[in-house]
Length: 415
Image (cartoon, rainbow, N blue to C red; front, side, top):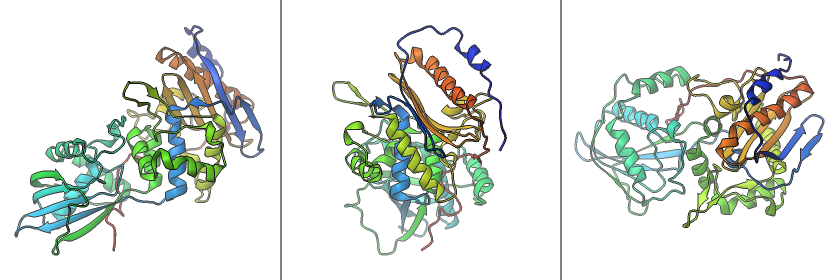
Protein backbone atom coordinates (compact mmCIF):
# COMPACT_ATOMS: atom_id res chain seq x y z
CA UNK A 1 0.00 0.00 0.00
CA UNK A 2 1.22 3.48 -0.85
CA UNK A 3 0.11 6.63 0.95
CA UNK A 4 -0.79 9.58 -1.26
CA UNK A 5 -1.05 13.28 -0.69
CA UNK A 6 -4.27 14.87 -2.03
CA UNK A 7 -4.07 17.26 -4.95
CA UNK A 8 -6.92 19.76 -4.81
CA UNK A 9 -5.50 22.13 -7.39
CA UNK A 10 -6.55 19.75 -10.16
CA UNK A 11 -10.17 20.56 -9.45
CA UNK A 12 -9.67 24.29 -9.88
CA UNK A 13 -8.53 23.90 -13.47
CA UNK A 14 -11.28 21.36 -14.23
CA UNK A 15 -14.01 23.66 -12.99
CA UNK A 16 -12.96 26.72 -14.95
CA UNK A 17 -15.50 27.73 -17.56
CA UNK A 18 -18.54 26.23 -15.83
CA UNK A 19 -21.57 28.37 -15.05
CA UNK A 20 -24.40 27.75 -12.63
CA UNK A 21 -27.46 25.85 -13.88
CA UNK A 22 -29.93 23.26 -12.65
CA UNK A 23 -27.10 21.10 -11.36
CA UNK A 24 -27.45 20.12 -7.71
CA UNK A 25 -26.64 17.30 -5.34
CA UNK A 26 -29.67 15.05 -5.01
CA UNK A 27 -28.33 12.49 -2.60
CA UNK A 28 -25.04 11.26 -1.17
CA UNK A 29 -24.19 8.42 1.20
CA UNK A 30 -20.84 7.52 2.77
CA UNK A 31 -20.26 4.51 5.02
CA UNK A 32 -16.95 3.60 6.65
CA UNK A 33 -16.95 -0.19 6.86
CA UNK A 34 -14.41 -0.19 9.70
CA UNK A 35 -15.85 2.46 12.02
CA UNK A 36 -19.47 1.83 10.90
CA UNK A 37 -19.92 5.60 10.62
CA UNK A 38 -22.43 7.11 8.17
CA UNK A 39 -22.29 10.57 6.61
CA UNK A 40 -25.37 11.05 4.43
CA UNK A 41 -27.35 13.69 2.58
CA UNK A 42 -30.95 12.71 1.81
CA UNK A 43 -30.08 9.00 1.99
CA UNK A 44 -33.64 7.75 1.42
CA UNK A 45 -34.50 10.01 -1.50
CA UNK A 46 -35.64 7.97 -4.52
CA UNK A 47 -33.62 8.96 -7.60
CA UNK A 48 -32.97 7.67 -11.12
CA UNK A 49 -29.74 5.66 -10.87
CA UNK A 50 -28.83 4.91 -14.51
CA UNK A 51 -25.98 2.38 -14.82
CA UNK A 52 -25.55 2.19 -11.06
CA UNK A 53 -28.27 -0.42 -11.65
CA UNK A 54 -25.45 -2.78 -12.64
CA UNK A 55 -24.35 -2.81 -8.99
CA UNK A 56 -27.78 -4.22 -8.11
CA UNK A 57 -27.62 -6.73 -10.97
CA UNK A 58 -24.15 -7.86 -9.86
CA UNK A 59 -25.43 -8.35 -6.32
CA UNK A 60 -28.39 -10.46 -7.45
CA UNK A 61 -26.22 -12.62 -9.69
CA UNK A 62 -23.57 -13.20 -7.01
CA UNK A 63 -26.14 -14.08 -4.37
CA UNK A 64 -28.21 -16.37 -6.60
CA UNK A 65 -25.59 -17.99 -8.85
CA UNK A 66 -22.21 -17.67 -7.14
CA UNK A 67 -18.81 -16.45 -8.37
CA UNK A 68 -17.95 -19.66 -10.18
CA UNK A 69 -21.22 -20.12 -12.08
CA UNK A 70 -20.84 -20.80 -15.81
CA UNK A 71 -23.49 -20.69 -18.51
CA UNK A 72 -23.71 -23.91 -20.54
CA UNK A 73 -24.54 -24.26 -24.23
CA UNK A 74 -25.15 -27.70 -25.75
CA UNK A 75 -23.96 -28.55 -29.27
CA UNK A 76 -26.02 -31.29 -30.93
CA UNK A 77 -23.91 -32.64 -33.82
CA UNK A 78 -25.63 -35.12 -36.14
CA UNK A 79 -23.97 -36.83 -39.11
CA UNK A 80 -25.80 -36.49 -42.44
CA UNK A 81 -23.26 -38.41 -44.55
CA UNK A 82 -19.54 -39.12 -44.38
CA UNK A 83 -18.51 -35.45 -44.63
CA UNK A 84 -21.58 -33.40 -43.67
CA UNK A 85 -23.26 -32.71 -40.34
CA UNK A 86 -26.16 -30.81 -38.80
CA UNK A 87 -25.44 -28.52 -35.84
CA UNK A 88 -28.03 -27.38 -33.32
CA UNK A 89 -27.30 -24.86 -30.54
CA UNK A 90 -29.31 -25.60 -27.41
CA UNK A 91 -28.86 -22.30 -25.62
CA UNK A 92 -28.34 -21.69 -21.93
CA UNK A 93 -29.20 -17.97 -22.04
CA UNK A 94 -25.50 -17.16 -22.04
CA UNK A 95 -25.16 -13.35 -22.34
CA UNK A 96 -21.51 -13.45 -23.46
CA UNK A 97 -21.76 -15.92 -26.35
CA UNK A 98 -20.14 -13.91 -29.16
CA UNK A 99 -17.76 -14.23 -32.08
CA UNK A 100 -14.80 -15.48 -30.05
CA UNK A 101 -16.91 -18.39 -28.74
CA UNK A 102 -18.15 -19.14 -32.26
CA UNK A 103 -14.51 -19.31 -33.33
CA UNK A 104 -13.88 -21.72 -30.46
CA UNK A 105 -16.82 -23.89 -31.60
CA UNK A 106 -15.48 -23.97 -35.17
CA UNK A 107 -12.03 -24.93 -33.86
CA UNK A 108 -13.64 -27.66 -31.79
CA UNK A 109 -15.52 -28.97 -34.83
CA UNK A 110 -12.35 -28.89 -36.94
CA UNK A 111 -10.51 -30.87 -34.26
CA UNK A 112 -13.24 -33.47 -34.70
CA UNK A 113 -12.70 -33.42 -38.49
CA UNK A 114 -15.91 -31.46 -39.14
CA UNK A 115 -15.80 -28.53 -41.57
CA UNK A 116 -18.98 -29.01 -43.62
CA UNK A 117 -22.43 -28.34 -42.09
CA UNK A 118 -25.83 -28.72 -43.69
CA UNK A 119 -28.28 -27.13 -41.26
CA UNK A 120 -27.32 -24.84 -38.39
CA UNK A 121 -30.23 -24.30 -36.01
CA UNK A 122 -30.64 -22.63 -32.62
CA UNK A 123 -33.39 -22.49 -30.01
CA UNK A 124 -35.04 -19.68 -28.03
CA UNK A 125 -32.43 -19.76 -25.27
CA UNK A 126 -29.51 -19.15 -27.59
CA UNK A 127 -28.39 -15.51 -27.49
CA UNK A 128 -25.67 -14.37 -29.86
CA UNK A 129 -23.96 -11.06 -30.56
CA UNK A 130 -21.13 -10.69 -33.04
CA UNK A 131 -18.97 -8.24 -31.07
CA UNK A 132 -19.75 -8.24 -27.37
CA UNK A 133 -17.39 -5.44 -26.43
CA UNK A 134 -19.11 -3.13 -28.91
CA UNK A 135 -22.58 -4.12 -27.67
CA UNK A 136 -23.21 -1.16 -25.38
CA UNK A 137 -26.89 -0.93 -26.25
CA UNK A 138 -29.52 -3.48 -25.31
CA UNK A 139 -32.35 -2.72 -27.69
CA UNK A 140 -32.98 -6.46 -28.09
CA UNK A 141 -34.09 -6.70 -24.45
CA UNK A 142 -36.19 -8.52 -23.42
CA UNK A 143 -35.20 -11.54 -25.47
CA UNK A 144 -37.70 -12.31 -28.24
CA UNK A 145 -37.15 -15.71 -29.91
CA UNK A 146 -39.29 -14.67 -32.89
CA UNK A 147 -36.99 -11.72 -33.63
CA UNK A 148 -34.52 -12.18 -36.52
CA UNK A 149 -31.78 -10.54 -34.43
CA UNK A 150 -29.99 -13.71 -33.33
CA UNK A 151 -30.15 -15.17 -36.83
CA UNK A 152 -28.85 -11.95 -38.38
CA UNK A 153 -26.02 -11.68 -35.86
CA UNK A 154 -25.01 -15.30 -36.38
CA UNK A 155 -25.22 -14.97 -40.17
CA UNK A 156 -22.95 -11.94 -40.03
CA UNK A 157 -20.43 -13.68 -37.78
CA UNK A 158 -20.35 -16.84 -39.92
CA UNK A 159 -19.58 -14.69 -42.97
CA UNK A 160 -16.46 -13.22 -41.33
CA UNK A 161 -15.45 -15.62 -38.57
CA UNK A 162 -11.85 -15.52 -39.83
CA UNK A 163 -11.67 -11.82 -38.94
CA UNK A 164 -10.06 -11.38 -35.53
CA UNK A 165 -9.36 -15.11 -35.18
CA UNK A 166 -5.63 -14.48 -34.83
CA UNK A 167 -6.40 -12.14 -31.92
CA UNK A 168 -8.73 -14.69 -30.30
CA UNK A 169 -6.13 -17.43 -30.70
CA UNK A 170 -3.38 -15.30 -29.13
CA UNK A 171 -5.61 -14.12 -26.29
CA UNK A 172 -6.73 -17.70 -25.52
CA UNK A 173 -3.11 -18.81 -25.31
CA UNK A 174 -1.88 -15.80 -23.33
CA UNK A 175 -4.73 -15.72 -20.81
CA UNK A 176 -5.67 -19.36 -20.33
CA UNK A 177 -3.06 -21.47 -22.16
CA UNK A 178 -5.74 -22.68 -24.58
CA UNK A 179 -4.00 -23.77 -27.78
CA UNK A 180 -6.35 -23.27 -30.74
CA UNK A 181 -5.44 -24.45 -34.28
CA UNK A 182 -3.59 -21.96 -36.47
CA UNK A 183 -6.45 -21.83 -38.97
CA UNK A 184 -10.15 -22.73 -38.87
CA UNK A 185 -12.75 -23.33 -41.59
CA UNK A 186 -16.47 -24.04 -41.82
CA UNK A 187 -19.14 -24.05 -44.51
CA UNK A 188 -22.90 -24.34 -44.05
CA UNK A 189 -25.96 -24.60 -46.28
CA UNK A 190 -28.56 -22.77 -44.20
CA UNK A 191 -29.30 -21.27 -40.81
CA UNK A 192 -32.66 -21.22 -38.99
CA UNK A 193 -34.42 -20.95 -35.65
CA UNK A 194 -35.81 -24.19 -34.22
CA UNK A 195 -37.63 -24.10 -30.90
CA UNK A 196 -36.95 -26.50 -28.05
CA UNK A 197 -40.36 -28.04 -28.67
CA UNK A 198 -39.61 -28.69 -32.34
CA UNK A 199 -36.07 -30.01 -31.93
CA UNK A 200 -35.64 -33.75 -31.57
CA UNK A 201 -32.22 -35.18 -30.88
CA UNK A 202 -31.17 -37.94 -33.27
CA UNK A 203 -30.15 -41.32 -31.91
CA UNK A 204 -26.73 -41.03 -33.59
CA UNK A 205 -25.98 -37.45 -32.54
CA UNK A 206 -22.90 -36.39 -30.64
CA UNK A 207 -23.53 -34.03 -27.73
CA UNK A 208 -20.84 -31.57 -26.67
CA UNK A 209 -21.34 -29.06 -23.85
CA UNK A 210 -19.35 -25.82 -23.72
CA UNK A 211 -19.18 -23.32 -20.90
CA UNK A 212 -18.74 -19.59 -20.54
CA UNK A 213 -16.09 -18.00 -18.36
CA UNK A 214 -17.05 -17.81 -14.64
CA UNK A 215 -19.61 -15.27 -13.47
CA UNK A 216 -16.90 -13.20 -11.77
CA UNK A 217 -15.27 -12.47 -15.13
CA UNK A 218 -18.65 -11.78 -16.75
CA UNK A 219 -19.50 -9.23 -14.06
CA UNK A 220 -16.08 -7.64 -14.39
CA UNK A 221 -16.57 -7.11 -18.12
CA UNK A 222 -20.12 -5.86 -17.59
CA UNK A 223 -19.04 -3.27 -15.04
CA UNK A 224 -15.68 -2.34 -16.57
CA UNK A 225 -17.30 -1.25 -19.84
CA UNK A 226 -20.86 -0.69 -18.58
CA UNK A 227 -22.13 -3.36 -20.96
CA UNK A 228 -25.92 -3.00 -21.11
CA UNK A 229 -26.40 -6.18 -23.14
CA UNK A 230 -24.83 -8.37 -20.46
CA UNK A 231 -26.66 -6.56 -17.66
CA UNK A 232 -30.12 -6.81 -19.19
CA UNK A 233 -29.90 -10.44 -20.29
CA UNK A 234 -28.36 -11.48 -16.98
CA UNK A 235 -31.21 -9.68 -15.21
CA UNK A 236 -33.74 -11.55 -17.37
CA UNK A 237 -32.03 -14.87 -16.64
CA UNK A 238 -32.25 -14.18 -12.90
CA UNK A 239 -36.00 -13.61 -13.08
CA UNK A 240 -36.52 -10.04 -14.33
CA UNK A 241 -38.40 -7.22 -12.65
CA UNK A 242 -41.11 -9.44 -11.15
CA UNK A 243 -38.63 -11.51 -9.16
CA UNK A 244 -36.21 -8.80 -8.06
CA UNK A 245 -38.32 -7.21 -5.27
CA UNK A 246 -38.72 -10.55 -3.52
CA UNK A 247 -34.98 -11.20 -3.64
CA UNK A 248 -33.91 -7.80 -2.37
CA UNK A 249 -36.53 -7.71 0.38
CA UNK A 250 -35.45 -11.13 1.63
CA UNK A 251 -31.75 -10.29 1.38
CA UNK A 252 -31.67 -6.71 2.65
CA UNK A 253 -35.08 -6.17 4.28
CA UNK A 254 -35.58 -2.93 2.34
CA UNK A 255 -38.76 -0.91 1.87
CA UNK A 256 -40.36 -2.04 -1.39
CA UNK A 257 -41.71 1.49 -1.91
CA UNK A 258 -38.19 2.91 -2.07
CA UNK A 259 -37.06 1.39 -5.36
CA UNK A 260 -38.33 0.59 -8.83
CA UNK A 261 -36.05 -1.62 -10.90
CA UNK A 262 -37.21 -2.48 -14.43
CA UNK A 263 -34.06 -3.91 -16.00
CA UNK A 264 -30.45 -4.76 -15.23
CA UNK A 265 -28.69 -1.98 -17.11
CA UNK A 266 -30.45 1.21 -16.07
CA UNK A 267 -31.30 2.07 -19.66
CA UNK A 268 -34.67 3.84 -19.98
CA UNK A 269 -37.67 1.73 -20.93
CA UNK A 270 -40.16 3.41 -23.25
CA UNK A 271 -43.90 2.90 -23.39
CA UNK A 272 -45.82 2.93 -26.73
CA UNK A 273 -46.18 6.72 -26.45
CA UNK A 274 -42.42 7.16 -26.17
CA UNK A 275 -42.35 8.09 -22.49
CA UNK A 276 -39.16 7.09 -20.65
CA UNK A 277 -39.14 5.16 -17.39
CA UNK A 278 -35.94 4.75 -15.39
CA UNK A 279 -34.70 2.50 -12.64
CA UNK A 280 -34.74 4.40 -9.37
CA UNK A 281 -33.77 3.89 -5.75
CA UNK A 282 -31.97 5.63 -2.88
CA UNK A 283 -28.29 5.98 -2.12
CA UNK A 284 -29.00 4.19 1.17
CA UNK A 285 -30.09 1.08 -0.75
CA UNK A 286 -27.02 1.26 -2.99
CA UNK A 287 -24.80 1.32 0.11
CA UNK A 288 -26.65 -1.69 1.53
CA UNK A 289 -26.14 -3.56 -1.75
CA UNK A 290 -22.44 -2.64 -1.95
CA UNK A 291 -21.94 -3.76 1.63
CA UNK A 292 -23.49 -7.16 0.90
CA UNK A 293 -21.49 -7.52 -2.33
CA UNK A 294 -18.33 -6.78 -0.34
CA UNK A 295 -19.30 -9.48 2.16
CA UNK A 296 -19.99 -12.06 -0.58
CA UNK A 297 -16.68 -11.35 -2.33
CA UNK A 298 -14.83 -11.35 0.98
CA UNK A 299 -15.78 -14.98 1.56
CA UNK A 300 -13.52 -15.77 -1.40
CA UNK A 301 -10.80 -13.32 -0.26
CA UNK A 302 -11.78 -10.90 -3.02
CA UNK A 303 -12.54 -7.18 -2.98
CA UNK A 304 -14.88 -4.96 -4.96
CA UNK A 305 -12.08 -4.40 -7.48
CA UNK A 306 -12.55 -8.01 -8.66
CA UNK A 307 -15.84 -7.12 -10.38
CA UNK A 308 -15.85 -3.31 -10.58
CA UNK A 309 -13.48 -0.93 -12.36
CA UNK A 310 -10.61 0.73 -10.52
CA UNK A 311 -9.93 4.32 -11.54
CA UNK A 312 -6.74 4.51 -13.61
CA UNK A 313 -6.45 0.76 -14.20
CA UNK A 314 -7.26 -0.32 -17.78
CA UNK A 315 -6.13 -3.33 -19.78
CA UNK A 316 -6.20 -1.30 -22.99
CA UNK A 317 -5.25 2.39 -23.06
CA UNK A 318 -7.44 2.82 -26.15
CA UNK A 319 -10.46 1.29 -24.43
CA UNK A 320 -10.63 2.89 -20.99
CA UNK A 321 -13.48 2.23 -18.61
CA UNK A 322 -16.00 5.05 -18.02
CA UNK A 323 -14.68 5.23 -14.46
CA UNK A 324 -11.16 5.99 -15.66
CA UNK A 325 -12.28 8.23 -18.52
CA UNK A 326 -14.33 10.47 -16.22
CA UNK A 327 -12.65 10.32 -12.82
CA UNK A 328 -8.95 9.65 -13.31
CA UNK A 329 -6.66 12.02 -11.36
CA UNK A 330 -3.48 11.77 -9.28
CA UNK A 331 -5.53 11.35 -6.11
CA UNK A 332 -8.20 8.91 -7.35
CA UNK A 333 -6.09 6.55 -9.49
CA UNK A 334 -5.94 3.10 -7.86
CA UNK A 335 -7.76 4.56 -4.84
CA UNK A 336 -11.38 4.55 -6.05
CA UNK A 337 -13.24 1.42 -7.17
CA UNK A 338 -16.58 2.34 -8.64
CA UNK A 339 -19.39 2.18 -11.18
CA UNK A 340 -20.59 5.19 -13.15
CA UNK A 341 -24.18 6.17 -13.93
CA UNK A 342 -25.26 8.50 -16.73
CA UNK A 343 -28.76 9.41 -17.95
CA UNK A 344 -30.46 12.71 -18.84
CA UNK A 345 -31.55 13.65 -15.30
CA UNK A 346 -28.76 12.04 -13.26
CA UNK A 347 -24.99 11.66 -13.08
CA UNK A 348 -23.86 9.25 -10.40
CA UNK A 349 -20.89 7.36 -9.05
CA UNK A 350 -20.89 4.60 -6.43
CA UNK A 351 -18.32 2.22 -5.05
CA UNK A 352 -15.49 2.34 -2.53
CA UNK A 353 -12.87 4.91 -1.55
CA UNK A 354 -9.80 3.18 -0.14
CA UNK A 355 -8.30 4.88 2.93
CA UNK A 356 -6.01 4.01 5.84
CA UNK A 357 -8.97 4.60 8.16
CA UNK A 358 -11.07 1.97 6.41
CA UNK A 359 -12.78 1.53 3.07
CA UNK A 360 -15.57 4.07 2.58
CA UNK A 361 -18.52 2.86 0.57
CA UNK A 362 -20.20 5.74 -1.23
CA UNK A 363 -22.99 6.67 -3.62
CA UNK A 364 -23.19 10.21 -5.02
CA UNK A 365 -26.04 11.35 -7.30
CA UNK A 366 -26.34 14.76 -8.94
CA UNK A 367 -29.42 15.99 -10.75
CA UNK A 368 -28.71 17.64 -14.11
CA UNK A 369 -30.50 19.51 -16.83
CA UNK A 370 -29.35 17.09 -19.53
CA UNK A 371 -25.97 16.46 -21.21
CA UNK A 372 -24.89 20.11 -21.03
CA UNK A 373 -24.34 19.67 -17.29
CA UNK A 374 -22.85 16.17 -17.24
CA UNK A 375 -19.24 17.30 -17.27
CA UNK A 376 -19.83 19.74 -14.46
CA UNK A 377 -21.59 17.06 -12.41
CA UNK A 378 -18.59 14.75 -12.80
CA UNK A 379 -16.27 17.50 -11.63
CA UNK A 380 -18.50 17.99 -8.59
CA UNK A 381 -18.31 14.26 -7.81
CA UNK A 382 -14.54 14.35 -8.17
CA UNK A 383 -14.48 17.29 -5.80
CA UNK A 384 -16.63 15.41 -3.28
CA UNK A 385 -14.34 12.38 -3.39
CA UNK A 386 -11.27 14.59 -3.03
CA UNK A 387 -12.79 16.17 0.07
CA UNK A 388 -13.19 12.70 1.60
CA UNK A 389 -9.60 11.80 0.76
CA UNK A 390 -8.28 15.05 2.23
CA UNK A 391 -9.77 14.01 5.57
CA UNK A 392 -8.33 10.49 5.38
CA UNK A 393 -5.10 8.83 4.34
CA UNK A 394 -5.52 7.39 0.88
CA UNK A 395 -4.61 3.79 0.09
CA UNK A 396 -3.78 2.37 -3.30
CA UNK A 397 -4.31 -1.04 -4.84
CA UNK A 398 -3.02 -2.53 -8.06
CA UNK A 399 -5.72 -4.96 -9.20
CA UNK A 400 -5.03 -7.32 -12.05
CA UNK A 401 -6.93 -6.30 -15.15
CA UNK A 402 -6.97 -8.34 -18.33
CA UNK A 403 -8.44 -8.32 -21.78
CA UNK A 404 -11.77 -10.07 -22.21
CA UNK A 405 -12.39 -13.52 -23.66
CA UNK A 406 -15.73 -15.31 -23.31
CA UNK A 407 -14.18 -18.76 -22.77
CA UNK A 408 -11.23 -20.24 -20.91
CA UNK A 409 -9.44 -23.55 -20.38
CA UNK A 410 -12.61 -25.08 -18.91
CA UNK A 411 -14.78 -24.18 -21.90
CA UNK A 412 -15.23 -27.83 -22.84
CA UNK A 413 -17.45 -29.27 -20.12
CA UNK A 414 -16.36 -32.67 -18.93
CA UNK A 415 -19.01 -35.34 -18.42
